[in-house]
Amino acid sequence: MRPSRKWMLWTFFLLVALVQLFPLLWLANFSIVEASGFFTDKILFWPDAPQWHNYVNAWVDGKFPRYLLNSVVVSAATIILTVVISVSMAYAFTRMQWKGRSVVYSIILLGIMIPIHATLLPNFAIFKELGLTNSYWGLILPYTAVSVPFATFILTGFMKSIPLAVEESAVVDGASIYRIVFRIILPLTMPAVVTVAVSTFLTCWNEFIMAYTFISKDALKTLPFSVMNFAGQYSSDYGSQFAVMVLTSIPAVIIYAIFNEKITKGVTAGAVKG
Amino acid sequence: MHKVLSNKLAIFTFVFPGLAFFLFMFVAPVILSFYYSMTDTIAPGLDVNMVGLSNYTELLFHDERFWLSLRNAILLGLGFVLIQHPICIFFAIMLDRIGGKSEKWFRTIFFIPCVISVVVISRMWLTLLDPTFGMFNKLLSVIGLDSLQHVWLGDPNTALGSLLTILIWSGFGWGLLFYYAGVKGIPEDIYEAARLDGAVGFKLHWKMTIPLLKPVIAVQMTLAIVTALKQMETVYLTTNGGPGDSTQFVAVYLYNQAFAASQYGYANAISILFILVCLLATFVSNKLVKGDSIEY
Image (cartoon, rainbow over all chains, first blue to last red; front, side, top):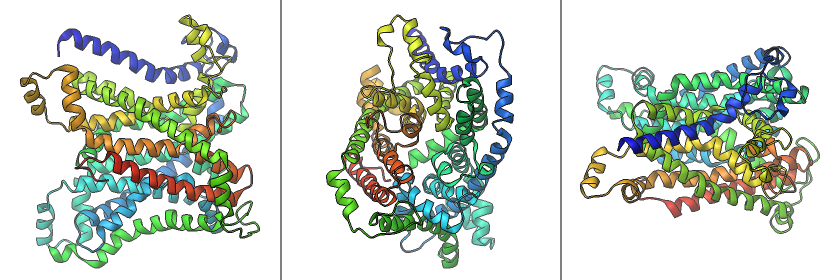
């Protein structure tokens, strides 16, 4: 590419990146602006008196640590369950020989297409009957169910690319099938596992409607809820509301920043090999 | 080797948990939903009165809202297919060309909105588009377009368009990532060969890159349609279907019928039709756009 065109492209990309980031920058900016500052004509500005106490409101009155803990517990449990279930299924779908494996595979993939909103109503009835509403399991189970189909799809695509010779030598050494899957295959599928773990994390961390439906006890609510709670409690104090939103988003952005390259690699492998 | 890989017990142990999850979380609810859809119950656990298929006939022949929400989903789907995805494809190709460190940086920045919770996104855009202190109207006045200032989400004429804008903004990163992965899968020597044949710039990409991306585009088109149909949280948290029914979507409608209007039986009938519509849409768009190599 010629330097002049490269330069034009660069400027254009920079502009678009600014448009992408602007709403978030604005959110962060106005989280330290006092209420009256919302009516100025300024677009982005450093306030004369930064309202850091908005973050204190968010942390204390927003019960941020409590919701943070809930989000961490639910996300961690879901990720572990999803990875274990999907890795074993993907192995059975790619390597093991059994009748009906392509049928079962297609059935599992149907889970990607079935809208969770359609299963919300009956699940609400079932969970209520089983006493799963207002418990961590009431979120972990549906989150896992939603994550497994996509995770299996990605992992199956990735496992196809691992040469069979890897297992052959292990079998000769007398390793059991479980040892092969979790000690030999799992480390080799790590790039895809990371993709799956991060995308599952983002789903759990940000999910709203199931939590909103299945959880009503304050002590069990997850982070997206804190935003809603706070919006009701501090309805006119936009600065504090924005502070909660910023705090909620930070962990997700950090996780993304750390695993950014791995996500791209995992998606690339999955998308290309299908 | 063969013996180890056809170990029945191991296969069962590997597949059963996932399958059990599927049965418990997808199949059982659908069956229960079908049962409730033939009743006029107002909330789960309350009196159940069988009413046969009357909920379905009501829904299909007398419920304008249901059809309106499907129409909105189709409009939104068209918006995704005709606006969002061409933008994503364009950026994916350009991103690959820009190369070096900036390629990585731009890719990272473009994806950031995708990691933000839908609750934050919705509330943020509600304030951005707020008619009194919203940033969007302020920006318009800064560039001298005061006349265009508007109650964006509160006007039936602009509500759906505003919603599409929010969704394009927040979904841009995922679309870009998948197309980018597709572009990266095209070997560089194919480009070299095309250049030797005299193809450059726009023509090169139109004749070469786009056709080679066909499998990815096929999958993404199906996903775009399904995403439009499944739209729920962003709508629920911003317009809740309004004003009027101008942004009504099936999932929002069924949710409000069940939990706000106490029409649990009827809402379950919507759920069942909703699943059928999604599966049908997947099937049809798969058939329509399917390339020869991709399987999904």
